[in-house]
View 1 (tube, rainbow, N blue to C red):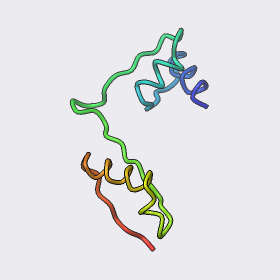
View 2: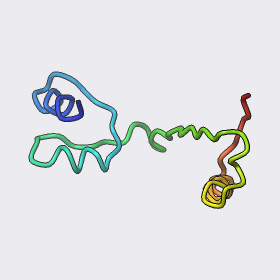
View 3: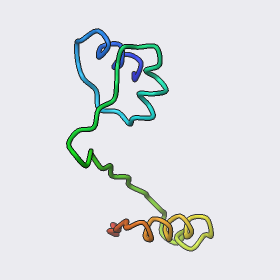
Length: 78
């Protein structure tokens, strides 16, 4: 569906909000360009789901530790 969105943008029939890497990759050869929305741009939110009891598995724990180091916050839902 990304290709269709970019085709509509190229035809002057719409706008799309996509990551800049995706515009560069999928929009190659199309008359489109990426622009930043506002001075800081738009930050994204990524949600991670982990099953109870699996937080201690090494690769999951490592990922969660890295996310915390980068300032991620968590909320626990049952």
